[in-house]
Each structure stands twice: as C-alpha cells, then as structure tokens.
Length: 286
Picture (tube, rainbow, N blue to C red):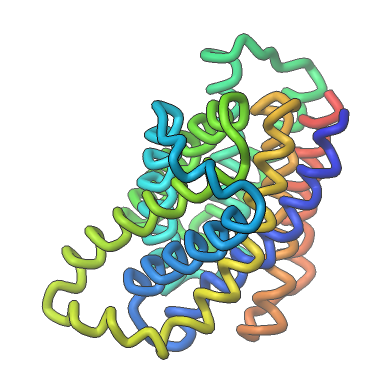
C-alpha cells in the first residue's frame, strides 16, 4: 500500500486549499475571475518547476495531454460551480455532501470501467456516507435541497468524477509535472471562457490581478502539492481506493473555514463529518 501516504498527504493539502475557495464570496469579488487566475498561477508555478527539472517535457505533447486538458475543463467547471454554491452555503456543509456523493460515483466508475469490486464492509461504509448526506440534506438543515443547490451539486459531482477518471489515465501514462502543466493550462483556458460568458459586462475587471493574486496563490500552493500527491497515489493505487479516503478533506476544510471565515463548527456538524469519515474508512479497509 505504497500509495496510502500520498493519498493522506493529498487529503490534508487539498482540504486546506478547498477552505480558501470561500475567499471570493467572503471578499465579495468574482468567483469566475478567481478561478482563472488560480489556474494560471498554478500552471506558471508547475512550469517553473519543470524548467529546472525536466525542461524537455514541454515538447512531448501527446494524446494523454488531451486527457490533461479535458481534466482541466472538468476542474474549471467544478471550481466555478463550487464557488457559486459557497456563496450561500457553508464550506462545512457543502464539502461533505458533494465529496461523499462524488466518492460513491468514483466507486461505481471503478466497478464499471476498471473491474473493481465492493466488499460487505465497504457497503457498510457506503451506507454510512449516505446516512450522513441525508442528515446534512434534510429539510431545514444546513444543506436544504432547493432546485439550485441540487443542480449545482449534480454538476460538481459529475465534473469531479470525470476528472478523476482522466487523472487516473494520466498517472498511468504520463509524468506528474507534464500532466499537471496541461491540467492547469486546460483549466485556465476553460475558466477564461466561462468568465467571458458570466462576467461579459465587467470582463475588463479580470485584469485587476491585484484583487485576485493573494487568494489564487493560497489555493494554488496547497492544491499543487495535493494534486501531485494524488497523482503519485494513482500511479500504483486503484482509483476507488485512492479516492475512498478523499472526502476526509472535508474535516480539514471545516476547521480552516472556522478559523479563517468564522463559520460555525458545532458538535452536530463535527459528528456528521466524522460519520462521513467513518464511512470512508470502512470503504478503505474493506
């Protein structure tokens, strides 16, 4: 299980990065422009690293590079949808629901396309996750099932699951640095298209990098390390196994959202997050 430490590392760093996704709504600036600059900065950082490590890899554009760009498209859509959802929902409520259902979707992808199986213990874990989702989603709770929330969540789960499949393909056929550069280039390109559509009346404001660079740097720094760790884990680990513990980042996100954005973190929320984590652990050990 050489992939497990990488998966745990990714969970921690991605959890911290996810907490900072709240910054656009917290600071009252464009989520779409923030998404663009986050991915541009990520591409620049990884490119600089490649220049000093394997500079020749830039010329090796191949079919797998298109998978990376496709991942970027899914990721850009995912980031934008998540940020829209976070405008009226707390990170501690959003992340457990979307990541738990996304984890289930990933397991089904593994079952259908990668011939993986689910044991009895893993089934118990899945039921625990479904229960936690129900408790978060019940009427009057912190994650009400209004039409907008449901549609945004479906989009987030779908784009996230598809991107994980592309990432698995990349880990098998490509190096981490090369694949990640094209991931972020693809994400930046599609984020720009999305921003041009949703912010067309104020599109010139995208050039105000002084507004976005701090948040973009925070998200990029943690996301790059987390993305690299996930890539390394996927090289030797199964898709469903690597991402089985992934929703545990919700706990990390909730803690950081509590300290940085003053979101509530009562015992009820902690218990539900822990229930989600317990379900993921059962899936992992099963």
